[in-house]
Image 1 (cartoon, rainbow, N blue to C red):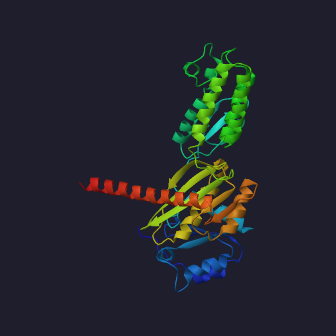
Image 2: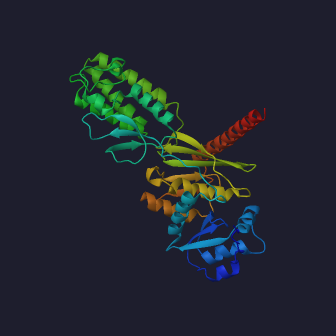
Image 3: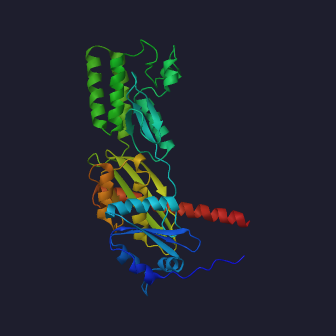
Length: 387
């Protein structure tokens, strides 16, 4: 059986047909596999740049050698092109694009609102259930750790509804002071339970001072009414809340930020994101995107930001500001697109100052550490395989 003859891509003839409108292009190899997806404000100008005598970088040179076909999709706007580009990247996973490995939706803490006695729980995925969602958290461990802390500070129930509805006696959590026992009539009044739920809400929103103010007022009222046992319990609760909040570094204001630190070395990249909500570090996570050889650092950052926020963004909590230690080539169009998604203004701020610069330095340090750790692990695995 004869092999199909693959003719060389005729760039000159192709470029004559290309419009100068915004849009997205898909490049295919001889096997019909999508090897690169890109977008442009001016398709003709952008695509022409690939076929000049001198192309920029080894990656582009290798890419052009493998092009057998190019498909173009014209869009109305740059924003539309940006969204379509990331849809195609997610769909085709082209080998010459920087690829962010598939990322499951982040976990949140869920506070129900349709129960007589609201509960706290871990939540992932679409937010269909009525209630409030706090997060995101970097992983399930961080959520469980926070929920364990909440049980110590504010004993609101965390049991499943099926357990709650079928209890006639209080469980162990009540016995050790980790739940108020709303499942059993007479253990706690609805008013007292609702007050504790409100403290949970305020604490998760980062309003620590308001929580302390309310607890101090309650303690003073209990003391004046000679309810010394209640006053002592509130005193212990105040001390526990203070012990937690004093350990945290917070910004001067209740900022909602994602802080993106980048470290690129010897063909490997690590992008570390700090999640800050209400001025408090909620958590962090390291990402190791697949980076084709010869990729410039600014392209890594640009592609990561697009994929991170535009792919699966219905489950991602968008901050007010995104801080970067690297300039973003298409900052304005990315801000506009993210703002449309969020329904509010989102700013991208390269190289900030003050407290924000401290956060950025922390994110960069974490990126360096994570990449060094990953490289050491790979070296260990390689050594074991040779042994």
